[in-house]
Image (tube, rainbow, N blue to C red):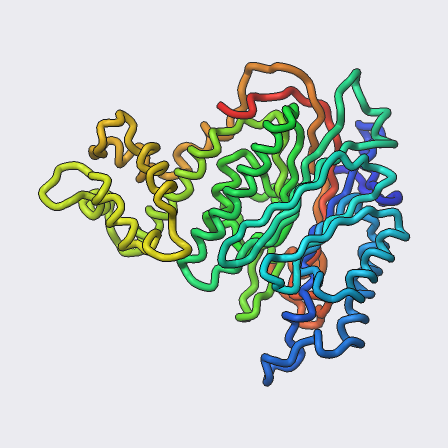
Length: 435
């Protein structure tokens, strides 16, 4: 991997065979809002927000680390937007260090939110957008469109612009099984928003970074959905972990005492093949359906019978809806909408005759994600033009124990680890954005 050293907000990567080249660094960190931090195990209502000296000292330590690290991009979750003193503290110290920052509170005055900051000396801000999910979790997302500036300009080739789309978000915690679908919808909304933004401004393919607390592990539906769209986990890429390596590292100890890997910096390079987003969404929902059916110990043929209406040898729309209702995927505020159900049905009904036979059921609903993974990740050979993407040079979690799957008892800065990834800009061909 070569040697990594810090110079300002950039990392310089070098090896025997390659000359030094500039890299950008990106940090994502859920800093645990004081309104959620418990300071007395015997009294869960006792929160750090009631003790100014406590939360002020801890957030000064967080800022000390961030400013010492000098990441090019900083994405924070559980930022206490409801406290003016804390907001001013971050804006002042980040501003004095050369950052431009944007904050966004969750809807319905939940108190916390997001903050994204970039080194203004090294990025030109092209646009900033906010996305409100308007769902039960009052979650939000930030979209920042930037262009790389000096010293990366010397790496330009012709008129190629070095642009990036950066997203910062914090998905809903899955307090119960019904909320897993909500989290999947939140990711779908983010990808729809990014796609619409690119289309509205007629943007050429560019790298996309999705940063934040995803509140789900590598075994979850959100992870598989993003992988189906060509995104890679930067930390896993840096350490050459596969999708199956689900227990190599952790990044969070939740309020239940469980440790898990939930903090990711996802990267999608412009040379990656991308399926139709709606098709990936349907596959993700059908994968959730399949998981729920298998959890009930139903076999492939049992599942077809479960979906089939009485006295029918095929699946009707009404039988399909009834199965979704029994699996708790519809019939409540967090379930699939009528429009989403119809979209799923259209995806499944290949020949459009209004019913699903056994072959369509197998092909569109029951087929494993893994069986199509290689096909989904293949790139297109129809190269249109050259652009700039990123290679992952290194990735580090702190505290270091979490990289071995352990959570240190003496770590008190947050209930999340900090993740920093080093990216190196590289020239690459554009692939088809959608196929």
